[in-house]
Image (cartoon, rainbow, N blue to C red; front, side, top):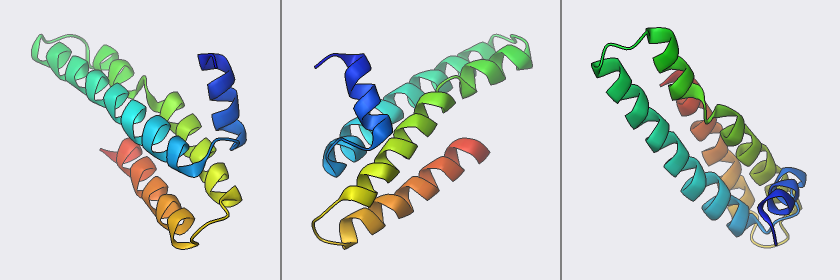
Length: 102
């Protein structure tokens, strides 16, 4: 399966909840955000324009919102233990709030 098809399935909520949550939201999202934050901090230390630093810091935001939306949709289709989608949705809300305000 290619990346574009996987992203489309993620967006549509067609991936299993565990895959959408752990692989796309947590693993890839965390990695992208850590790299962007480290780059932004390095640029800030190098006294690069704050506008450039902010752009680099928020660059992963579209991906994070895509992953959060897709995971939310996957949670809505989950057929197992009702605690799993509820927990996933709660974590998504916390995750997006952290991304937007920290």
